[in-house]
Image (cartoon, rainbow, N blue to C red):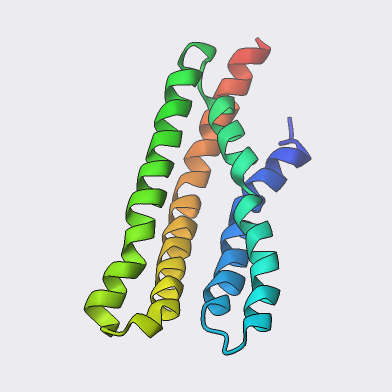
Length: 144
C-alpha cells in the first residue's frame, strides 16, 4: 500500500521547515533595518512552527500504545533541554568568545540558527529511512 499523502507531506514538512528557517531566520538577524528584520521574521515564525505537530505525532505512529507516553516525554524533555539549554546559551557564548562585541549578537544568533538548521537537516535525512521502516512495521502490525 502506498504511503498516505499526509505522511509524505509530514516527512517533507520537516525538511521544508528547516530550510525555511535557514533562509529566513538567519538572515533576519543580519538585516540593517528593523523593517527588513520583521519582514523576514514573519515567515521564519511560520517555518519554526510548521513541524511541531507532525514531529510529536510521528513519535506516536511508530511506538506501541504502551510506550507512547514515556517516549513522548523523553522527546519533549530532549527538545526542551537542547533547545532551551544549549540553543539559548550558544549565541551568548559566541558573542563573548568569538566576537567580543555586544553589538554583534545578531551574528551570534545567525550562526546558532545556521548550525541548528544544518544539524537538523542532517539528522532528518539520516533518520528518515529508518523511521519509514518502523512506520511500515508499526502500521503492518496494527492492520493484522
